[in-house]
Image (cartoon, rainbow, N blue to C red; front, side):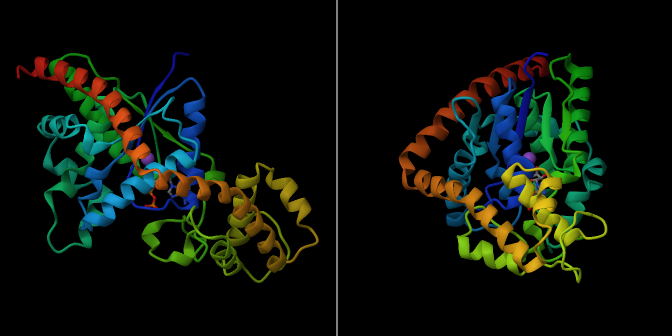
Length: 329
Ligand code: ADP
Ligand code: NA
């Protein structure tokens, strides 16, 4: 197979949690190291669709860049850049906004959910999925790794590619969502294991951030909600709390679930939690150090992002030039 064109975006929301890392970012590094052509965009323009604090956003952009590098994204292999540095995203967003309808955007679940919490709904929040389609289509991405909650947005991008192609000529591939089907890649909340680990739970005790200090990680895992059975077994539906710990343990060590359960035979939950904490801390320690190292070299980060933006611009400008010509602009 020829190299696939992979595009993914991530909002600069500061620290990644273990779910984002194990479910998304680590996968990107695997794709990057295969033959795929990978583009990763820090989507700051998406972040301003909800209330935000400018100095915090600026810092979070650098923190996300440092974090992605620390997790193994290699700018020599992957095009890594910040969305607002490539003006074509906004330009294409405008053009695509004329190819879709208001009812179509109004029924998207993420819009409904986020707009419910706001008194006045910004237009940007409404148009957000169109900008996301622009992100994907500018690079003619064929595959877009996302969480299952993003499927409707990918369907909008597919719809926009088809509409564009049928009105103005075939220039866009219809992208496919790459959704991790494997249950095992889902990391659950430490406080409520019926849900996935998510920053939207708004409970710092429910998530492990990849830059959490070792004692913080140990404490969060110690307090993780399990059940009243003290031995260790793996049964995601029956015992989600303890199974989530086994799963995290397997993901950070690369060991199989089976061998982990086997080795934990003599342990009760309290002792087992210490073992999981040690494994998570050991896995995250070098990443945490790398994040600090990259953040301390601010100028190198800025330079790296500028090189990434320059690479992205070349493709984006080529696409926009085709698009404008087809539209009679
Ligand atoms: P959050 O729910 O914390 O806001 P996002 O929706 O921003 O996370 O997700 C960013 C990426 O991380 C997506 O690709 C998503 O699939 C992945 N991801 C988020 N939470 C988890 C989780 N608990 N387990 C596995 N992957 C996750
Ligand atoms: Na993503």
